[in-house]
Length: 148
Image (tube, rainbow, N blue to C red):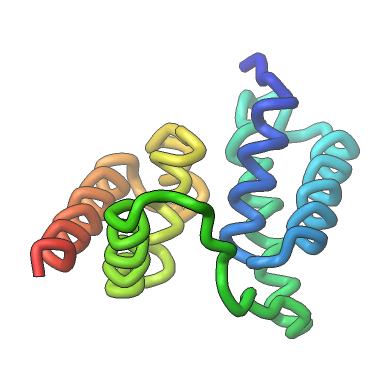
């Protein structure tokens, strides 16, 4: 499988930033992820490069939580936009808090980073069909929360 490393670097960074909520820390973890990827040889030959990248990134983010260095940002800067857009953002953020961490992470991987369901399944150790079911359930939860 041929990968566009620039595109994957950006996606891994977004994933790390989502998990860690700190720019500098997300940059460090992203760089460490790619360093470990280029140092390894086993997974590349089996065609599981993308899965390996996300597994390494996920584990490094978990390690950062364990070190207790990851502190969430107080607030995301609000961009100048219409009131309705701000209301939608606030409602979406509130609806996302109704989901558990794995559901939010799966939605990020699938829709923001466009990771295939089979790769997400391999990361979580479940089938791609389970990934599809969990994502659909998370979307239903979001819809119900947003309708309230």
